[in-house]
Image 1 (spheres, one colour):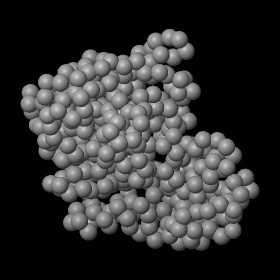
Image 2 (cartoon, one colour):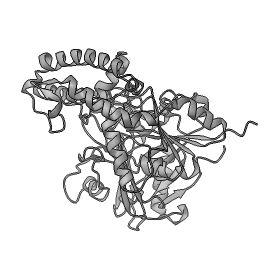
Image 3 (cartoon, rainbow, N blue to C red):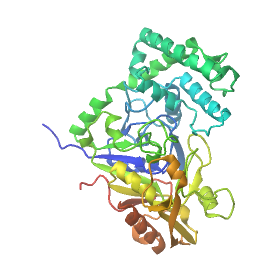
Image 4 (cartoon, rainbow, N blue to C red):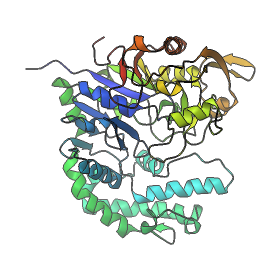
Length: 458
């Protein structure tokens, strides 16, 4: 007998990543039976704080912290077996069961050591040539996606066939080592200690990469699955699924501040193609946004403030918000909330509702500025342009609002927020055209205001 189909929610970042998606995914998993990661690689990072204990995740869906919930890594993810196994071992040491609950798509492209070598070498070449760095994490994400699009990637399923894997690996190394040793002059570059064991005279060595991959295969293959089939069957059997995005909308390779973007589609629509479900299975899209803006790495940022000088609003955001990247440890650039940017995110994601995070970071600021548009080449516009060069020329049009001195930390009821905090949230909803359904008032799982639960039927 067929049961009632489950309800499925997509969680995406609406800025440049680091919006606090991990906490919300963990919180929403209370209503879900499966959590799916559908794009990106270990360049992403989610920090969860549960009962005061911090846990950082990079590849494994945040739902792993909820006992009994199945976690899926979809085909849209580029997978570093080494980093995944490292993450699994860390969770297991903390007493979290992982291997019997984690399912990995056999179609995931693999990130191999030469991808990271290429990534580092290219950034070095840009810097030496006088070009601005993209600001990649140096983890090989972009080169791995390039191999996927060029139809030459090694995938998880190839680990089942050692001879086939070896043949494809030799072909890939012949190509990439040619680029490394000639065009990028890799023998003269400095690489970190983690990459040096794979290199000789600037070239990546076949034997080292192959033997490591075969060792990883012994642990990875038992978790390999037809994720598309399992997700569809779970849905038909009534399971609620949660699709977890990485990075943020403005880092999307098509819709972000190109070329200062990541190498995958970070928007909600990719939850379907990145996991193997139909778009009709995506019922609600929750956009996560900070109560201000941050960005890591290069690229335009219209509302950026001075975030390094003590006593300034930007410094307040940086220090009170502990704005350091989970994956890289790099400081995040900070700025005022940008409603025109969020309009673009709402448009390309089809947002059903917003979750505002880090509202508590703004506690104590006497005055808040909110960007509602830009002046660009003598014209006023109310939505973020598509081109990075245009964005760089945008001058924010601000509205000024009164701040609040009361603490919002740990507030769990909307009516108990300071009146000026509520007015600020109402203005964000009006300026962006998206209702606010959730508000986060600290990193802790339980410090959440639910205005409308995403898993409740429309």
